[in-house]
Image 1 (cartoon, helix red, strand yellow):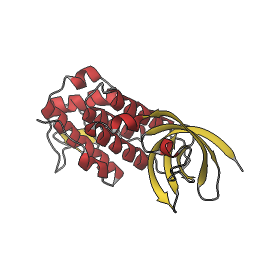
Image 2 (cartoon, rainbow, N blue to C red):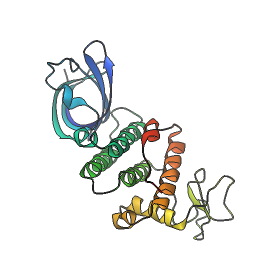
Image 3 (cartoon, rainbow, N blue to C red):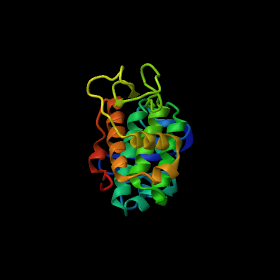
Length: 244
């Protein structure tokens, strides 16, 4: 029996048999893990509550033939307890977990930067220092950048001209008038500035932004993310935008 230990964030769970669960975890060193947690649905389980989505947990597992098996679990920080009490933060966090799951394709492929982004995003959501949708959009943009899909925001995505006119998802970001494809949108300059601030972590600029620019930013970021994932993020339908 090959034992190993890692810390990670529980992304999702699914029932297995009468008392077991399969837990999907984004781990710091190992990457994405799918493992069986035996007996966790019984009321007498020693660590059932520690293996719920949003939980930052320290795990010991042993390697199985198809799925690994959780043998120990210790909670490092239960983000779910804080987020569950606030609907906007909970739904934003749910969208983060789903995105992390989608962006880490293969199992047991190290994804340290994605793990650190997810932990940082959940921590920021839980401490309430910024508006939830801003935190979510910042997470989307940074996780896309780590995956190699950062949008061009300062020069044309096609010809690198500094004079930009529109935002085109299929082109990879902002475009100039000559390179603008059909279907490109023309967002406010402040909206592009907000996207740049979120990507860079400039929270002073982001927190000072207006609601209309936040909403426009959220629409562009969500569309850009889902186009690159080639799949919708189901949790996004529950995420609340800031009132205009």
